Image 1 (tube, rainbow, N blue to C red):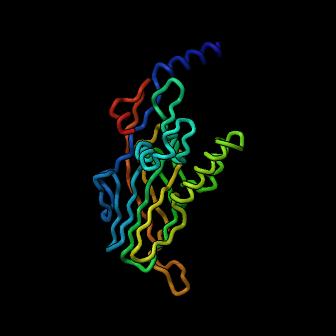
Image 2: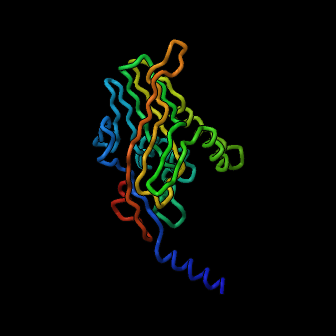
Image 3: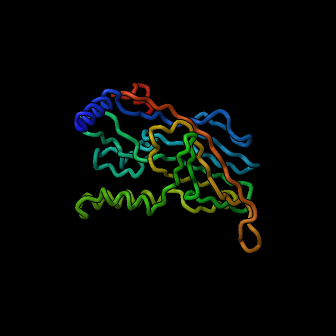
Amino acid sequence: MRRLWLFAALLALNACGRYFAGPLRPLEQQAPEMRVNDDGSVTYTRDRLTITLQPMTDGQLNRQFASVSQQGAHSSNPYTFGNWHPTGDGWTPPRFAVFLVTVSNYQYPKVLIDGLQATITTTNNRRYQAMSYGQMDEYFQAYWLGRTGQGRAEYESRGDLLKRTLLGRQIIFSGQEKQGYVVFPVLNDDVKKLQVRLSGIVLRFDYADQPLEQIDLNYQFERDVFRGKQPPPELVEKH
């Protein structure tokens, strides 16, 4: 009876289909200092300091790193699966939840931001912590097949790109603009509304170079989640 029940449950699950998440989009209601932009990003402004957070789709990331995203299963884009598709399927699942942070500082002598302090909280009480380079390197070691040849080249390519583009502890001096990616584990299927929090941003330092003024920024987003055997056509185009 237990086997029959399990078989029936699997059939029901297959009949209901699977989940397909749409791209994140900003909520219209943000903090007063926040501005929603046409490209789906949200910008915090304080005098001549701006800090912009943009949720990235796999399509955007594949175009940004096109040279390492067009080799199928051997694509070495660290943020997506490239143009690889599971066998017999035309849909590529997301690998991570990725955001681009852009800081433009024309106000303070220097600003300190640490991408590893970023967190996501959701309206259904889930929480995600930004991933470090070490955590992502450990994740990719499972894809390093054979430890030599092409597998080694792909592993090193991912690592090199991460070192150049992942946002860690970053100081932005006056007159500088810096960008970097903040990466979270892939969001659960039941997540529809969320808040990305950039914590501990230091705007002023004392004579001993210790933080004197800090801020935390909250960015609000939402997404649609579809269920079926295939994703809707409009989602495939955005993906």
